[in-house]
Length: 205
Image (cartoon, rainbow, N blue to C red; front, side, top):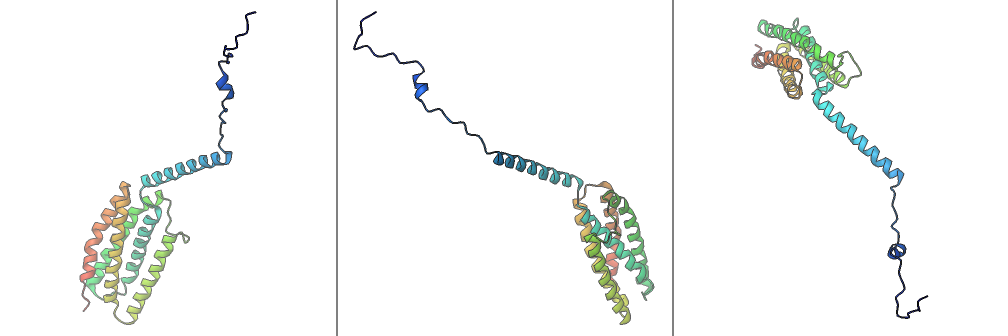
């Protein structure tokens, strides 16, 4: 046995430092937080999909319903007004209006069917709003008839109604990607424009 050397350094194991070092603790994510993050990402993905999907389909059905309901209601007004109009000139203008509204409503039938929209749906907010406007318009026209100022009032009301309708048609046209809907709106707008001008320049004698 070799003699003990007091100056000899004791041998240190090669993994000594690893043994004395504090072992790092592996942190695990709280399961509730993890599931919350997963749920949030899924929700964000669904929202993104719905936004892209709705954008690809063009305008919402409410916009189309509002325009179609206004067209249909104005046709009803023009039909009932014909027997109350005294001026032959205004009767001709109104007869042409009824024809244009009828054709435009017909052209919108397919887009409405595609969007599964019914103008008879009394629970549809756009249909209800248009119905309320129709009732108010008919009340004003009835008052005008009783006060013998029907022609003048009717021309003024149609001028305003057609102006707002055309504005709504332009907005719907810009939002739409449907070829058939854009064609129907373009044709209807083109045919309504000169009639709106004729109503605005009508002078009841």
